[in-house]
Length: 191
Image (cartoon, rainbow, N blue to C red; front, side, top):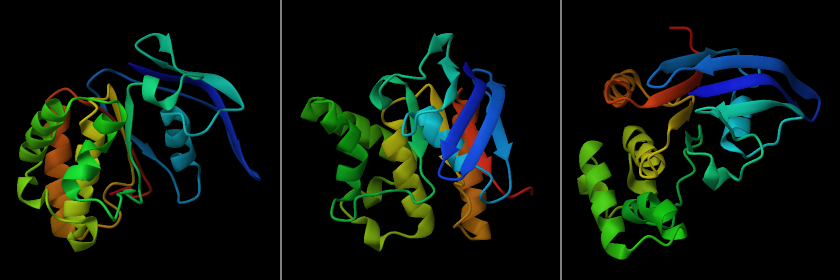
């Protein structure tokens, strides 16, 4: 499904050198490493935010290394979550569909379906600044999943959550995996 071959990423004075790995379709794959070891750089490169110095990235035998971000079929939940503070939860989730000029009716259907799946329907009218950490995570995840990515990239999705919220998020991520979602999860936490 996802194959990274001989990937070298240069960022200022830091370099990830000749990295190769494969994540099979439907697999939940952890990439473990110390803080500052380049895990986020790897995700950003797979997502198309960064360009590798050398190497190749494939999804289902199609090379995506030089494709635009919106053509890669990859969704990323950033460590910072990157929600728009001035928009409602509904608008945050709908944003990727609006950019692609999806009809209003289809957007409503998709947003309501993903909100029900992630149990955030009651939050749709609220702004991100009024949400708990776990609610923030679910909204960011919903915004990513609404595009139905082939591969879901998670950058330290549990790092800012307390123990109860971590457990809730793990249950949610396991259910996505059980439903067949391919997940690449980077973390520094070896537990």
